[in-house]
Image (cartoon, rainbow, N blue to C red):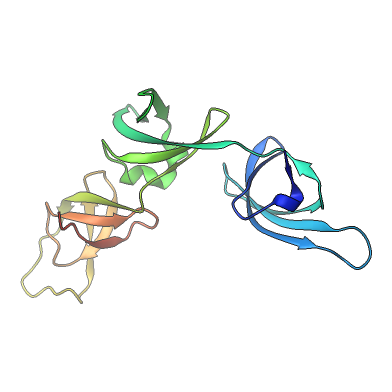
Amino acid sequence: MISSNDFRTGTSIVMDGAVWKVVEFLHVKPGKGSAFVRTKLKSVQTGNVVEKTFRAGETVPQANIEKSVMQHTYKDGDQYVFMDMETFEEVSIAPDTLGDKAKFIKEEMEVSVVTWDGTILDVELPTSVVLEIVETDPGVKGDTATGGTKPAILETGAQVMVPLFIAQGERIKVDTRDGSYLGRDNA
């Protein structure tokens, strides 16, 4: 249990059988009446944001969220199979849990899997990944870095916009948060 006086940004609580993360909080002490804590909470499962007011000192259950490093080993049908790097246990994760992140996951990639009471809430990818371009229009002489962009399909099936000078077979860095091109891979 955690007191509403101890709320901080990022604190996870259990409310109505779901996990909520404190996005904003404000401790209000009016001249007349008792103090209260006004919060903005974000659902970890759905992403919905609600505003809720707690009495000062009110206790709520704290969510014990665990993060574990796992490696994507293979894809079984439409399920993504991850292996815990410490216990070597395998866990299958449905594509709807991954959402848009699924298009950036490749084999042997290490990710952080967020769980609560044995339920997988989220999969956190690295901020950038290096992927190979498997299909794009060929570059034409005279294409410059300041020119336009063209679509490219990556080894995972994701489509990103790349500069005109990028060719098929090149390895590029992609931002996993918004799917944007970051640059060529220098490795």
